[in-house]
Length: 367
Ligand SMILES: [Zn+2]
Ligand SMILES: [Zn+2]
Image: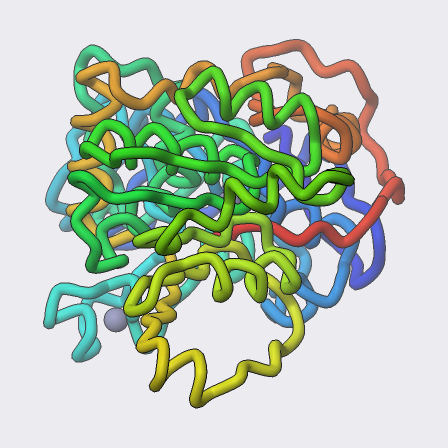
């Protein structure tokens, strides 16, 4: 079948027409991929940057992990989903047997495998996934929208985990990429009093404004007005770092109120020296991370907010491209693009072959 694979440990990827398809094992289903979206993790895998090398790719591998499709084959002795079911897929493939899985937190699985990293992924016409990793898509939701539940779920999970009720809260978001934008809408839908976004890119600031946030640029602010507005009288109740940039995280520690909370969502490489006494004792801050999505409460709550019209996932999509155009998708994402969908139904614009247009090793939000 047609697929985009990572075959060698270096920059680039290959678009092929002859990717073999495995037989189904018990507990697995085969999906016809309807839509798959491209993520910062895919950019890092394509570039073979440090973040991707740290994941320990099992080469060769079919790339891609944000996906929705239709069940076209069910493995032996497999309980649901039935043939024809429309599903989204949880990237974090949990073993179902370890303590964390049995205790109901599969995203902390001791034997976690990642779609498109450890097992063949979704930049393909068809993908094989565990039946237990499929989320049945609500009837009224399109499969293009459903492909975005996984990345948007990173925002939903951060809100679920922050421990701060959104009702009446003042919220600061750093970074207006797709996850930051979804976070704005979730916070407002759940009753946040105000959401301020800091973002250097003007196009992304406009998107954040359109979603109801006050969007500010701290980097080009000669008079300090933006800085003043991100230092509320008493500081923000909760701040979400979604840019994956370490200095941005450091800035948030200064901008939450005493006993406020900072949520780390974006994957930032490197370490941050933190003034321990001031941060954790005299100011009493809570700093938490958020990894993946709670299976399935994140998916349920997010799809309810999307269904009720509070979160606009379709509005994140700026481009729809054929599978062969992954390198073009990555180039668009280095500019102003929002979410780029790869649709196997579109005619490919490229012949099979390898491309090494790797670009930067993007930082971003976790898979
Ligand atoms: Zn497990
Ligand atoms: Zn992703």
